[in-house]
Each structure stands twice: as C-alpha cells, then as structure tokens.
Image (cartoon, rainbow, N blue to C red; front, side, top):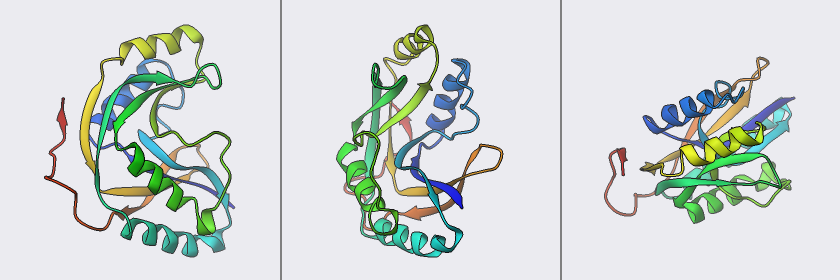
Length: 182
C-alpha cells in the first residue's frame, strides 16, 4: 500500500512565499507539504492499482482546460477544523470540476468534508497563531495560469513528493499570464 494525493501545485514565486509563511507561523508540516490546492486528499492505494490510476488521471487532464487561478485574502474552517487558508477568488469552479473528475473511476471516494478548494497556511496550531495567520495574509493576492495538476506520494519520511504532472488539454481561455503580483 501507498498513500497518494492529487493537487495543483502553486507555482513560484507564490508557492515558496506561502510555504515560508507557513514555516514562520510554526506549522511543523510546512517543509513536508508543498504549497497546493488539493484535488484528492490522502488516499491509500495498492501498488498494482497505480497504472490504472495514472491512466485515469491522464484522461481527466486531457479532457480539462487550463484556467486562471487568483488567490485573494484569508479564510478559515474554524470552528469545524483548525485551518486558516488563502482563499481562491477565481478558479473555484475549475478546481471543483477537476476534483470531481479525479475522484471518479479508480479514485472514487467519499470526502470527510464538502470539497472547498483552498491553500492551507496554518493547520492544527494554537488559536492565537491561527489568528495571526488570518491577519498576516489577509491582503495576500496573486494570479497565475493552472496548466497541470500533479500526483503526489507520501514518503516514509512523511514528506509529500510530486511523482508525475498531468498537463491540462485544450487551449487556455484567453491570454497567457506571466506570474505576477496583483
């Protein structure tokens, strides 16, 4: 058995910037989890299922289109879950469609909570630290093109590592963006 996840990696410079914020806030998972938007949460699979899973992910990617993602401000899942995150202001419906596609076929599974795309910046930390994260990144904003998602595997050292990228098919609707701060 192995534990996999599927996510949209947040590109540089934003991914590193948000990961540094997570580390500065004292989140012990900051260096173990690349900055991302989850499409499939941690899922245990058998080794012999991996070929079918990769074929499935390729089909989902090829049937999807690139899209613009805009991150803006912070939000939280408290009191249900001790999480503070940077919110998506654009790209939510595209993430929802991708997540639905990924979580079908050989990866069909129930979720513990309704799907809500986000970028975690603080998790399972004391309330005052969660408050600090919420306030510190309240004005955060960036935008970038999403052109792929990635299959990640949870290592024996508890670090999540990308295993394969799956390029989204079709043309980007509109002009390409260079990564920029807004």
